[in-house]
Length: 163
Image (cartoon, rainbow, N blue to C red; front, side):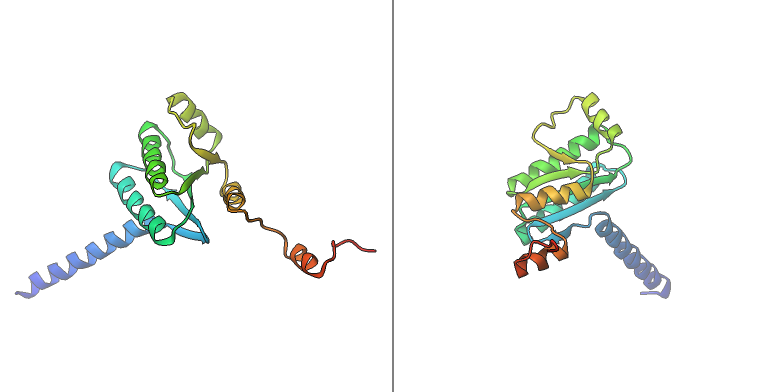
């Protein structure tokens, strides 16, 4: 093989690796707690990206046994009919594996758009922020977040008040 051909193959291998890295960065499934996964979605969704996202998410659900998935659409610039359908596909696929899906990051504009599109989202749990989604996820798992001082007070039997 000639030197230019060798360089071309090396360059192509580098490009392929970079594309793979970018795809993985676009679909980061994050384990935020035992039983809770989060998938922040940034940028627009198309069919190919949704398929990659679904594959990564479903694999993570199977591997982790997570019961709750939080889809964060804060970074999705436009939610139209196609994007909403892609999100519903993701919700349906995760449910088939036994995971409850919470969609967070809804703006007032996105909520109105979804209403005007007339899509049936009655079976989808939504929250405006990731924090509210995490609160709900923890509640569904029977967990609560308490200030560290409250934990110390509980352990010592004190109610934290001065006498």
